[in-house]
Length: 454
Ligand SMILES: Cc1cc2nc3c(=O)[nH]c(=O)nc-3n(C[C@H](O)[C@H](O)[C@H](O)COP(=O)(O)OP(=O)(O)OC[C@H]3O[C@@H](n4cnc5c(N)ncnc54)[C@H](O)[C@@H]3O)c2cc1C
Ligand code: SF4
Image (cartoon, rainbow, N blue to C red; front, side, top):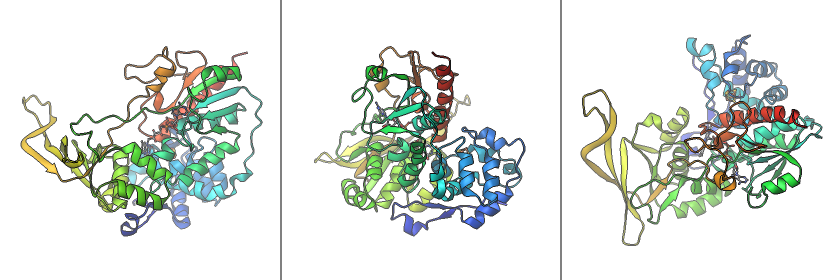
């Protein structure tokens, strides 16, 4: 027995378009898969889900053919069923009791089905009565919006301040549409708006609205959920040449342009032969964008293939689409021509070695193994720094040794009064569902704090 795979757009088609690759389960497979759930009385899957979704509960409702009720059940614990049904790393499935004996239930795909099919009738949702204290949430990524949703449900008045022109944080402007359509992000956010969220876009905290102003307007607490900071600069000679880009600028353009404009503008801007430096999800996403623009593209990574990206199936999709993995190759220098544009990438082969014979195996350069990749464009996808903006806004706020915001583990309170924090700002979460869980935890902690305050 293997877990049924979702329907997928065929490679020949999908490597030329920006539409969603995975099409989810059919109704028939959904029903069969829902019936496979053993309905454990102490479900390990629920324990493993960072949001604590009642997985057997929503699957039982799906089995009864009620996608709306299944979605409502999920929304008791998560407002991002459409998002998580697509990009979650699904730790729940690794804990399913069927995982070891045959194949885990396809929980993530069932969640997606509940969201895609239940949402059609979701306008029946009742807006909670909001007379409670005012709370400001800074940042509309998964952590900020999850916190906002749970605070709204508890009756608080919540305003979310977002500097970008669209809500959703990285879910909107980072993850490309062929993995997570922005219409799906917007649908999930619509449920949070239905709860009464006032989301103020293009409003940067510190510039368009200040802490002083929030206090004057009687906001009783502020939750900082501004995500991680700017991109790491890959310290490599030649990074000043024309034709060197950061992953973020490529991904933002991909997410705000129409599909036709992406092809016209990005297709022209990028050269024909591209090297992406890095191994994270942003590197994999950029490489798959380039393939769709008809480019040849290699991900250059000093380590091994299994370190690339977050989700193994996405890695396989990328390979099928034509992304090349130049692994065990360390970039040494970006080479340029007389016009100041990229003309190649000098790399050295890497291999595991134990030079002292002490068992300290490490990746080291292979002698005399330098080679040049014939590329005219480089995309740097080396991860993110910690968010420095917070230190500028709050010079006295305490940080951890790694530069993240220091918060009390239970209350999510920062070292400053009435200021709380959640998401990637507090912990370098690898996965969106962890950032959501951090937002949910902050909302419950804030409720406890405000209830005890006169
Ligand atoms: C390219 C890419 C692909 C990814 N793919 C996956 C995946 O497939 N699966 C997965 O689980 N995780 C994935 N992740 C990780 C996941 O997206 C993050 O962990 C998550 O988005 C963090 O959520 P957050 O709310 O803390 O921050 P963010 O999503 O970064 O949101 C922070 C928000 O705060 C706003 N903001 C910042 N400063 C201010 C200010 N001063 N005033 C007002 N607003 C402000 C920002 O504009 C942003 O909207 C990916 C990440 C990247 C970069
Ligand atoms: S949010 Fe992720 S971990 Fe939780 S049930 Fe959905 S797929 Fe599983």
